[in-house]
Figure (cartoon, rainbow, N blue to C red):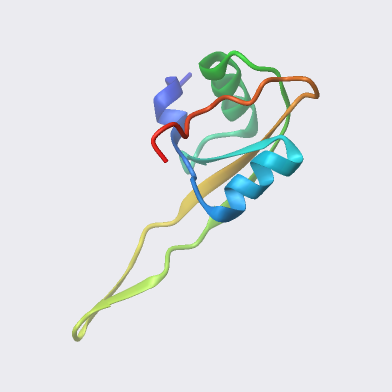
Length: 97
């Protein structure tokens, strides 16, 4: 099994992510491209000491980027929406903002 920090890369701190966190009791993370929902659930439960209700994942395709006449693509990446069970305390990984 992969380690926690190879499954969960970083929290996604966006306006949509903060809205979902406040209204739907859901955390948003960038995760490894090959990570499964079960691995994401286990990693979040052990890292933040919370109970997870469900995990939804989405693979985001990389955009085309240009540098003058040279074109390339950013890599594909995966994000996970992790819904916590009712009554669970939200972890605060956003202390610096």
